[in-house]
Length: 160
Image (tube, rainbow, N blue to C red; front, side):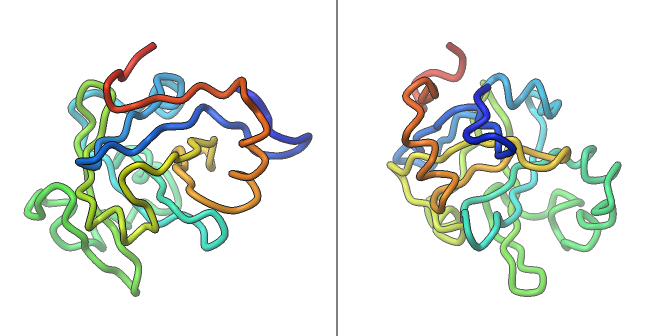
């Protein structure tokens, strides 16, 4: 996993958003963050600078300072909200998606809430110790475009 600039972010890979909102989660990111097949993962907004979203396991959230967040999002923790449906908290969009065959599917209308569209290339970076970030814009993305060694995953294949 290359470090884009000295002291900067590490990038796992690019992942292209499929027409139906299918997004491959790179195997290295799944492994590093313990994202398991069949797990319901929480989508949280990315930074204003980078856009996109963070994809976290509920277990990782519970172990963090954000431990109360799933309970603060009515419907997400108790499985009453449909996959990809947005729940708002303080003006920010949250949703959940199931990890299946290394892929999450997020409806295009939900992706739009994160500034993402089908066909976009998302840069998957090491976020915090909590979860990988899937970013769509900003200086980190611009720097990553100068790194041809970064693999690009598409919805047609989840593992290399």
